[in-house]
Image (cartoon, rainbow, N blue to C red; front, top):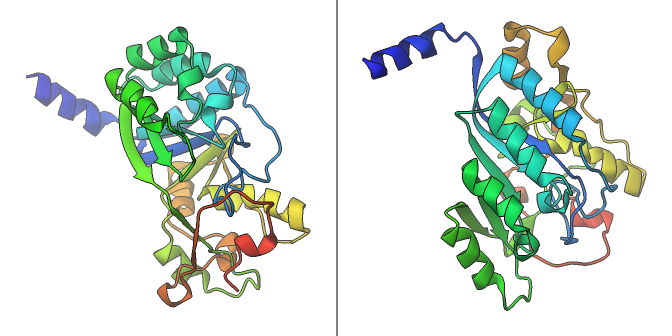
Length: 266
């Protein structure tokens, strides 16, 4: 009976299913990874307010059945109100998988109140493991695992370049090959195809380039049909990306002064 009621509830729910929704709660980071795909090494210092976080997530929840919600950055644990954000996320998304994507380096500085909020609200920490010379990293992972909030660990020894500065990529081809096209991002009232289409603004500011920054889609002024079209179509920014295998350009992770060439394939 319970399963049958669950199925009926799903059928009645006319909201669009969204596998992943991401939100930057900070843009900057404690690491300065060369060629960061979210441009956090060259981003301005930014912290989302609790009110804006709540309003954005409430708006998204009206339009989507969200399977997984990711608090992103930058480094999310730099946010001084991370505890409140965790509580708001679980209150608005009671059934979603909630994750925090972190480099893990600040985990040992979290207070017991934050750990308690993570555990109580079943929030997971996804850790990107960079080749940082920290003898404490295994202890950090042990602490996350012991608290039963460890999501996954991704080893990041290499980054890749993906910007075609000439802007002559075939957008539909690029979109088809893109590994970020399912990383739907929300900021304010707007959703964006991927973090690149929004946060490339920092690349433009740093290097005086004119890569188109997406205006996104305003969720207060749209309908399900328009949302579906937006989420399944490339945007102008796609012309400045390339994911062709013969153009694949990997380089070892490092922390250096940012250069335009760190992101540019050709």
